[in-house]
Amino acid sequence: MTPDSKVAAPSGPAAGRSVGRAVDLLEFVLAAGETTLTEAADAAGLTPTTALRYLKSLETRGFLQRSDHGLFSAGPGFLRLAALALAEGPQASLISMAGPRLRSLADGTGESCYLAIANGDGATYIATAESQRAIRHTGWVGKTVPMAGTAVGEALGGHPGVCFKRGSVESEVAAVAVGVRNVDGLIVGALSVIGPTHRMNQSSVQKAGRLLLSAAKDLTVALGSPGGKR
Image (cartoon, rainbow, N blue to C red; front, side, top):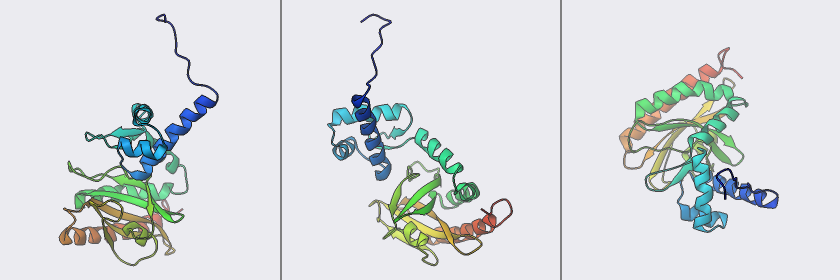
């Protein structure tokens, strides 16, 4: 092969299969939140060597990222695309108005905070403000969790007050959530504080609940203002 030679990119059915495998792996990682190479390969029906090739390609393009422990999760490239899509969609005002409230919640609780919306029989996280701590919860933007049995699901389902669940999605994670209503009283989203179970004790959960209730009330007012009402 000469220096000027080029390797032809796959075309036809081969290209379609490659794209399909990459998308399957991306969807699995996003749904899992974090996953190992072995788990991703098994889910996609691929050998670890083949799966790693696709995963590394997605990582290079920023769609996935890999932790020091080898766990794959959503990367900054995917999050940027998701944010752009949501910014043009019907949830644009909610996301925009929730942004500073999420940051305030994260600073006040020391944990990562999320905004979620109902999505069929699931709850999808659409925005976040991460904790500044070294050990923190990350990577759930774009992830959908069940409505049943989760704090955010209960909040979106109309449960009054503060909802708390420990280990409902991940065994080492606890969540506190509160529903957000618009000025007409309809639930349009949920704010949640998510952190490792060893830090989510009674005192921290109560504090998170108070801050969430205040932020949810403030967000309702903001959504009803001339610049925020949808």
